[in-house]
Amino acid sequence: LHDLTVARKTEQMRVDFIANASHELRTPLAILVGSIETLLGPASGDVKAQARFLDIMQAQSSRMSHLIDDLLSLSQIEMEEHTRPSKQVNLNELLDSVTHMLTSKAADLGKRIDLDLSLDPITVIGEPDQLFQVFTNLTDNALKYGREQTSVAVKLKLLGNDVHVSIADQGEGISPEHLPRLTERFYRVDTNRSREIGGTGLGLAIVKHIVSRHRGQLEIDSVVGKGSIFTVKLPKI
Ligand SMILES: Nc1ncnc2c1ncn2[C@@H]1O[C@H](COP(=O)(O)OP(=O)(O)OP(=O)(O)O)[C@@H](O)[C@H]1O
Ligand SMILES: [Mg+2]
Image (cartoon, rainbow, N blue to C red; front, side, top):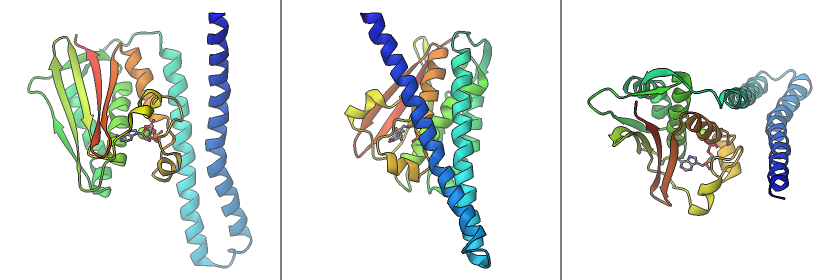
């Protein structure tokens, strides 16, 4: 009986996943199709309208390509889930490059990233590209969901046999009933709002898979109205 329940649940998840992915792709596609029709029809002689519709088309195609990149990442990660990563990764350098990459995005959003690294370099066994994606996704969320004119704190610490990387924002926070579902694919606290600011709800699902491949843990602490702290714990070499 137990096995059957598990099998049903897995099947239901697969069905939901395909339905969600198709829906998320269909929305921008519908906007593209509509824009093309407008460009060919009513807007065919209107240079200003053409520029406006091309902007819309650019935004929607980049949304589709972001979604497809994330879907490909997920399937890649699932294929590799049972092979252990084996490279040495210097987390000081990795976090430095994540921060660098997101500095201009932070500035565009009116925010800052404060990087607090331990003095001595900390190294873990991992897959550098995947760990880069973990910290990029978490920092990206902190920037997206943080209040304006606030900063995101990225910290690296050694605690006993664990390496802790924490990413803290000063944002709206997440109420406790959402926490258990946050890493599910396509799960968003406020679907419309996330979609508006460019989120499909795959970022944390990717983070969870990668962290578990690294035999680590993801911990989420959040206070509504104050902010959230996402901590990745990885075993020290
Ligand atoms: N730092 C945060 N503060 C408040 N809410 C958050 C934070 N990080 C994530 N969330 C909530 O969790 C949801 C899932 O996050 P996730 O990163 O998986 O998706 P996303 O950011 O919406 O889209 P994507 O990462 O795929 O572009 C978000 O939609 C948001 O509601
Ligand atoms: Mg995200």
